[in-house]
Length: 128
Image 1 (cartoon, rainbow, N blue to C red):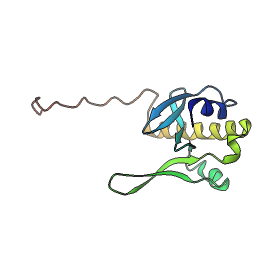
Image 2 (cartoon, helix red, strand yellow; image 1 turned 180 degrees about the vertical axis):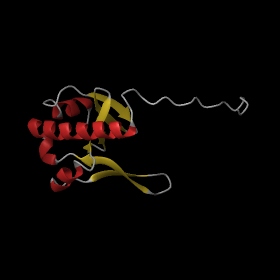
Image 3 (cartoon, rainbow, N blue to C red; image 1 turned 90 degrees about the horizontal axis):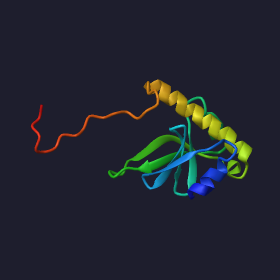
């Protein structure tokens, strides 16, 4: 799914930013990722407050296989097929997903900007 198709799905939700990541795309509003595209499918951020709605709509979680063969379950769930062609339904699901992303950020104590990490030491640098 290309960026224009993604923007079209979320046209009733408002402007979204799309960033390439891991062979797919992260979908953001105000620098907060609320959805992702992988394998041509859209997945929405979910949590304990919203996953039941997605399950009732016949959704399934996004999973991927790690290099060592383990399957990893994520907090992103497939956007219901009906929402792909219904801008109002897509807006409602996107709003729900953004709420889940906001709650996740609040639980982690992140206030907005990315987490700064310590720079890696070069092999030539002495250990401290």
